[in-house]
Image (cartoon, rainbow, N blue to C red; front, side, top):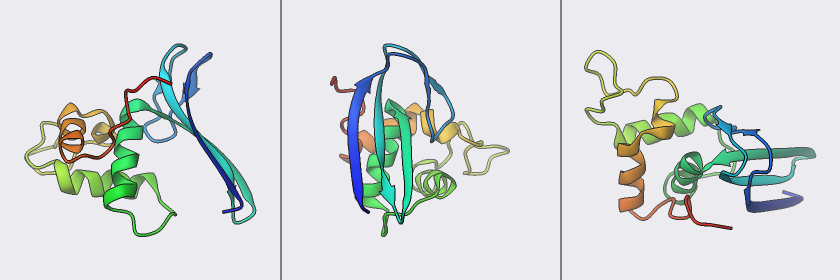
Length: 122
């Protein structure tokens, strides 16, 4: 990675969370990352819930720095979504994107010590 910036901001205008697709509203705390990876510039914004999940993923699961949001969602669901109310037809898989804002998942992540900064002020 040629450079990397990782900051928290209070949104002055709406942004889209790259992980879940939800609109981050003005006045809401969010995480902004930008950098240059293998010659390509990138920028992304994460809402607080997704930030907590991504922090847990990088601290406890990821073996390399490259990732895919579907992979993150699947890994988190595999670890935390047993008999989850979002599961369909009695299986253990959460509905598409439901894992990103599931209080059960977020509480479990915070209990094991991951994603701790999700709701702290700038």
